[in-house]
Amino acid sequence: MSVSSSPNSIPLFKKILIANRGEIALRILCACKELGIKTVAVYSEADRHALHVRFADEAICIGPPRSTDSYLNIPAVMSAAEIANVDAIHPGYGFLSENASFAEVCESCHVKFIGPTPAAIRLMGGKDQAREAAQRAGLPILPGSNGVLADEEEAARVAAQVGYPVILKASAGGGGRGMRIVRSPEEIAVHFAAAQSEAASAFGNGALYLEKYIEQPRHIEFQVLADEHGNVMHLGERECSIQRRHQKLIEESPSPRLDPATRQKMGERVARAMKQVGYTNAGTIEFLMDAGGELYFIEMNTRLQVEHGVTELVTGVDLVKAQIRIAAGASLAQAIGFDPERLIFPRGHAIECRINAENPETFAPSAGHITAFHVPGGTGVRVDSAAYSEADIPPYYDSLVAKLMAHGQDREEALRRMQRALEMFIIEGIHTSIPLHRKILADPEFRAGEFTTRFMERFAKPAARRSNQRDNQQRRGA
Ligand code: MV4
Image (cartoon, rainbow, N blue to C red; front, top):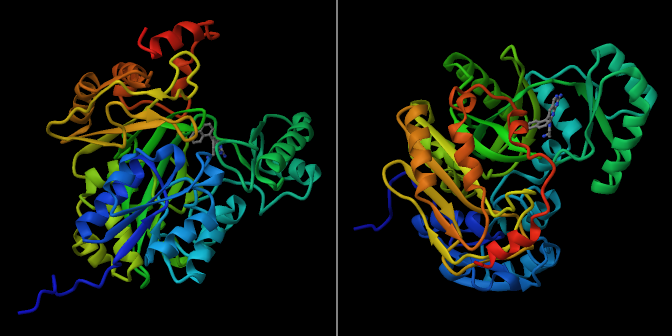
């Protein structure tokens, strides 16, 4: 009798290198273990005691603590891939995940990059190009420039056409850098120069484009999966408006503001658009929603996102397993385990709080030693974290300590689960954003689902007190 698994299964990779660290490296390890795929961890000298190193089948040190010397070091990662003889690399999020050249290097080394093609990363990674591609593919965009602006005169001309206020954005932008709001013709020259030089120094590319500025938008993004045979599906949206300094704090699915008809209509439009651009693997299409509920494409992320878990909770689809199966050549149906037409979602409501190690006064990331760590559990609670009791949080990387997710039959149940889970999460030795999350969850407007990307302005502290010394004492357990 044959030992092959289900009749429509496809041969998967034997060994995958995980080119990342922290909770997402563990998340990818989980998927590999469930699929029976061997794993290779890479790590920096600061991460020798990290859990992704402990749980992987093999682990290879790729350099000193700084990201540029290790997790971003393409020759070091590829050497590890060659030494371990892997057949694929999962890049996670951040680091090399949206680096088209890295995806190309993988291709030329006959190692499968688990993600879209280099061409798709390049097309959707350039923001002005992505805007044009989205428009050609039938997605609604804001009025603005056709591609990059030649100079401030062109900026003034386009701004007069679309009407003030407008926003100047860096083509190579990210994290809100190289972005300027312009409210009148008098301001455009000075803002053009400032945005251009900021973009040039931050990204080595000063190219700018321009859009109509939306005053109080909501940030809503659609998740897609596409196989390498031309099939594309959407998995609904995530509401990501609760953010501070371009760092998301809370994400949920579905959005409290999107009705089922719009979800279906826009989801199908997004899927058709991604089919038209030949997109493959997992991707996220970001929209701004204006006060009237209209959605406008702003940019695309060609990777798995931090907040993918809330989509997993309301769809029942394991997005990381789907990514791996798609990269191995599976159809969408094989990748998710059933006919995409029969996916019924959202099933209830899911919410995520990003627990960061941060100074509560300045919100600056704060490294340190965790002295006690207890994660909440129980019905409808999921915690993705690579932290543990007696772990060190190194200062070199981002400050995410845990993603706390709650799932319920409706938003109210999900919120109550989240509140009790926040109360039952113990992290000692470092400061975290748990107290901030408890305040947000108690806010009447948040609970009513009435918020925009400006929601967190109300939690801004008056000028920070001089409390560093007291802070450091607390951290040491004084
Ligand atoms: C905008 C906008 C208003 N109008 N574009 C911020 C970072 C980048 N991802 C896009 N961003 C914005 N683009 C137009 N035409 C407002 C923002 C914005 C924002 C967007 C999503 C989530 C949080 C935000 C916080 C400030 C500004």
